[in-house]
Image 1 (cartoon, chains in turn purple, green):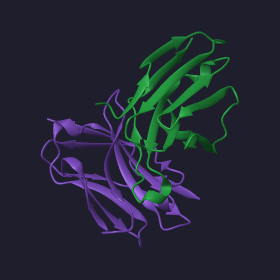
Image 2: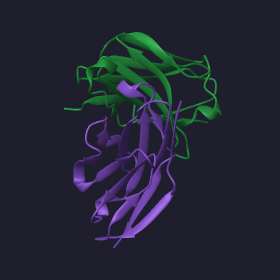
Image 3: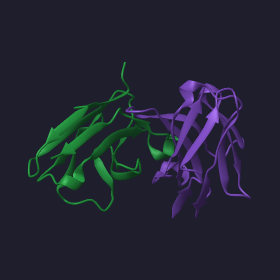
Image 4: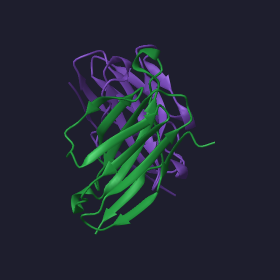
Length: 113
Length: 115
């Protein structure tokens, strides 16, 4: 069985400052991990994925995430926040080969001018 | 071109009615899904179809029935709508699990409001 915890329901940062969105997972298997972003009233867009290759994964729009097996974490970071980054972010865990996507509860990112 | 499309985008209806939401993908994927997002943004899978065959059916009332006429389409039919069915429903698609590239691509969502 898999589960995901996103430690912060809401994160607020100033434009130009770093972003850190935290995700911890639990999985009976070697997991695949994903981050999705949902802008207001929009669908979900894939930011990046980890599928047992490099532990540091680079995604779109300057985001990256690092898989740390010892900490069961897959935190999302970005060096400098932009106003357009304001959205809901979901961490997702699945078993190998994509069975059973399990979504975290989401973290709402606010970016202040 | 839209990769995963859903119609309608908004659906307002009364309790007891029957309604359908349509989903189409042009990505050549062979697995499609329906998710429900509640008012707290929590996403939960409802159904998964692979090559027109049901492979995941979570604990969903049997008033919900998915129908897949072909690999590119997965429709969701809901009978006897209830207030608690109000939510945003997302369709998604992916390659087969054995392909090595199975991230899911999501449609824009259908906001269902039951009054």
